[in-house]
Image (tube, rainbow over all chains, first blue to last red; front, side, top):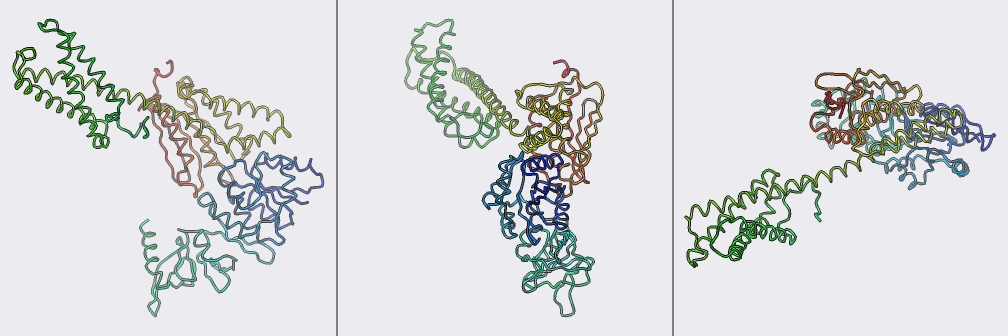
Length: 248
Length: 352
């Protein structure tokens, strides 16, 4: 069995390596020090199980798990955490496996045996039920021919829905992600603004509001030539949001 | 007995309650006896005097209680000072009305035993003076008693909060995990960590009134940071810059340590590369200034609930010990967060 241990604390990783080695010397164990490191390693080689710490700097365990779920085949994920706070209740409610540190050997082996992967919908649900306790994602992720591409949320200028997919647009590039505009709108409230039935724009990147030749409103975004149409239904909200942006 | 928290309730008791009415009757009777005994020279029978005094005083005091009971709704909305003034004026007013009624009653139904041998004005002055003194004493007593009970309640609350906020469960379990790991790889360090943790817990389980010295607090902080250093490794950097000659300053224990815990939890841990915590102490007459500074991520710039709890607890304990001579203030901005504590830097605190 190939296992990846992800934790920002060296001693925490070392202990798990020790425990696992003792339990079964046949385990192949690798370590990663944070979410990004984990994603990189998980793409280079295939792991059966990933032991993922929840509280990590940069990209936390929950977000890492969401990006990992794009991998094929998907690794099984077991979350680890030092403290049983309210987030953990949400985990048990969603039947997501987790271990409390210091992790007991028996409990660990038990989890490894029945470890299963968590699908994305499940994780999104979990994130929703965590409410304010969940951290906002820092990246959108796309599976491009087997590799996971991470798009920093702060770089994204707008998101446009087209039939089944949503395209993420940032300077010079565009990618299709498998998420709905609705869920993104709820998750990034205050960061992205709905301007049209099929478009969200990043508030931070709005340059100006202008009229095209036919007199309908468009938004010009920084470093992006394409202008985004504002539907009549959303005009009022858009004006209000831009006004409050200018004020602050 | 009272449902509301004392902190928000008025210092005036519920005058409508049977208990208070009973207490007032007892006190009124004692006052009647006192006044009777105090009369040095009297031609009338003492028991008759007592009866008249009792009748009159009970009448006044029960009327006062009744009016305070009726005005309770209104008085409870006022601040302590206005409630006190209001109830004082009310008692005086009621006393005046009752005294006046008593005067006219005696005039209309004369009786040579009770017929006063002095003028109406003098009678009113005497009655009102007694009423003014007695109600002032009663109000003062109620106020002091309320303050005392409030203090007891606040202390209990502070104790509870202190227990809750001093050691974060997050820290405890992470520390246990670190020790579990060190037992395998470095038993000597594991042993040291257990000792440090024990010291930390001993300090946190102490009575809240326990005073420590700045020196002790600093060495406790160093132990705490040593534990965290094992866990965070090179991500945690600490710089101390301590002013001389403050080691013996008396302070409540665990004034500094919770600030370091906040600095690590909200400052260092969320940063992938960690950062530097600086702890400074310096003399700046008339204060000794303690300052803890740490970097923060842009996203964690908003104040945290946990931060707030620990700071509030420290603030309360500073107030309990130094009254208003000490303070705690917070500054944040530009990726930095700093907490400053001002302590009175005088000799009084060093040898108490």
